[in-house]
Length: 295
Image (cartoon, rainbow, N blue to C red; front, side):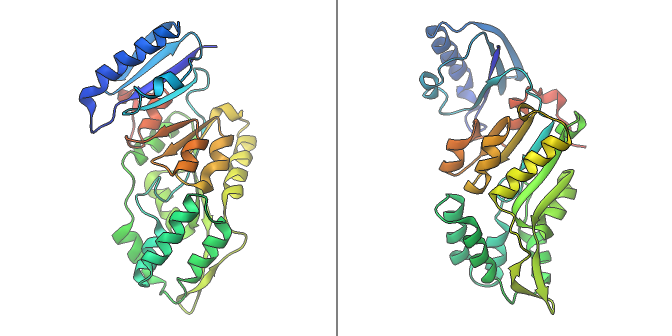
């Protein structure tokens, strides 16, 4: 079965991309891998190499260290389902850390967030302890946090709008909070969102959230449910995230992608985006720059 190796230049080092491409071709030739076709997705930025066989990627990793790349079967490249994490993936911040800043506890909460994302803490325990630290924050702080701190990740809207234009269903699944996912869903154009709901009393956070907590298993459950409802094979789905909480859906999706991710998530993924923005995932699916759509 034919394979495709997609290379995407590091935006900070586009000048070296041509030499990287040449080096990759040389190492493929050394493995006696036939290059059946080369297609530029964006001139000097992203290219597809269609290969007759599956190469050993290890000898290529050194020359690919300064670029983003994805090796996959050519069939089902354009996914019909995408599940995306929100915090530090579709948006540039961790909402719970920004909320904690208004309580004067950002450093403490951020430390727990970082350890949970690395898989060093149980997610449910880490979630409950961080939410408890928000007790007493006024409800209007959520609006202030969204307005002042939440920024959409570069390429997010283009990724979702392009996939939707081509018939894909896009779901935002987050271990964060529905207050933020509802709004990000509408701005970016996701078909649905799922997250945790914070509880309020007399206009203040109670320090608790509605059970059950949306954790890694819930993200995986969303993936499996949507695949079944949409009558899709696993190969037709993609999942993208950056932390340990995303690993089960990354591993189960047809294409699991780690986005500027923690080591555990990167190790679990089929491909990583280490340098580029979220439009890199469109290149991985074989979209040309001319096909990108922002809506």
